[in-house]
Image (cartoon, rainbow, N blue to C red; front, side, top):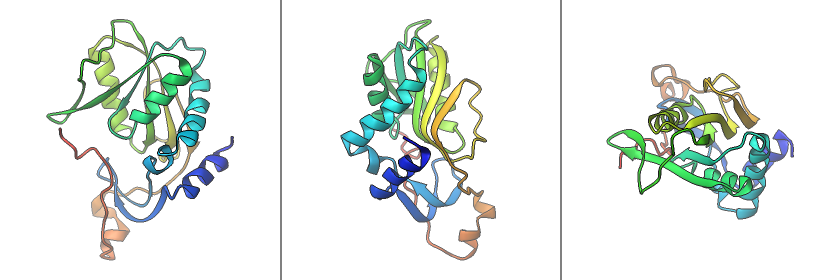
Length: 192
């Protein structure tokens, strides 16, 4: 499966959106990748996450973790293919933490995954949650890297697709300057 094949799946699923979007990072973009529209189809979720799991299959992963909400299905499916546990971090008072009885044991070999990475803020916060629980982070994976490969994770990182999609600070956004209505489809504003 090539990058083009994966983008085709996003297009067929109606998950590659064009307009004016405020991303979870606070940046603005003319494009949005709504992975939930792809992941609603179990065959696509399984196919994509199996490909991501294959990248990390020799790293002796013991648990896969993702930030809620967008990464939950990715974590579950990657973990299913690796035959390990899947957990997720969620926001409490603005911080990503492990809740619901989830834990990462000291030294447990952990893989962080996400659906789409732009700046990597949610992934970095998830890495912090792993470190607070004394897990051993062995890698980071995503379905899509829309930073053009510029997002720095500080750990071994692999994305199935690398795109260079424009993202602007709100003060520099050409779409704002034209008065185009903005849509905020992300989940970081959910403070739980």
